[in-house]
Length: 367
Image (cartoon, rainbow, N blue to C red; front, side, top):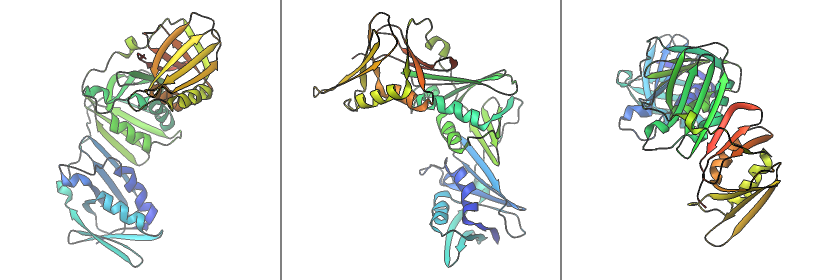
């Protein structure tokens, strides 16, 4: 039975949109598969890892009958990528999926759709709103680098998503640094605080476009749903209590400088050459009109960089992890950044001059 007949790229595009969450190793073999469902002119592609589910569709169906089947995602994508550009037909017969193009023909084993563990959408009333894709993509870009990876404190392996009326706030921390970003949305919603898993954030960054096209977000008690274009992404939420970010962001600092972002990032990148994999510390010495950056290593090698800054306060010497600083500076797109300091044992606060929407806190290091 013929299921799909279309240009190769027209099949690949929706398939690649859902394939990002498919893991190579699974306890359930069917989770390596994609569910392909043909209904009328539409063909939908659905992938899940039990925690996240992505579905999209395209008008690429062929033949009269409706059908559904699951097939190995990676094999199907690799076959389509290897074929020359042109028309491809995909047909189903005797539990085998046949991919044909020109004189090329591939036959893949399938598993029945009844065995595929789809995630049901939670239809309970919750917070629901829309915002431009570009805006959500920007929020994630400003904080994603501060999320923890495989931390035993599981609630840190994700991003705090706060809906508060007409404002969205996102916060990420790994216990050593914290990133915060806020934005106003076109319509007011209710109040909700949830933790979105790291993998969901990574997938959304891959899928969202840098456009004004809307994305609809619906938050239920244990699930969040994103709808944009032909894509629907369902994700479970991380349970747990996220740290109180208000207490982490320092206030009242009196030692502050405004630095050209490119110059500071360049100086830190050069200084980091002499740091080691195990020790990424850099020493800051802030004095009249100058910020000195120093690094040294176990081989008694040393790097010194100096930046001219507008500063006339008391001298300060403090150490930080250079990678944490570069993560923020490389993600910001502004010409200059503001850096504020307390004492040698206090965290640094990095922000954008004249803009309260972004804050980045880095804990000090002993050097």
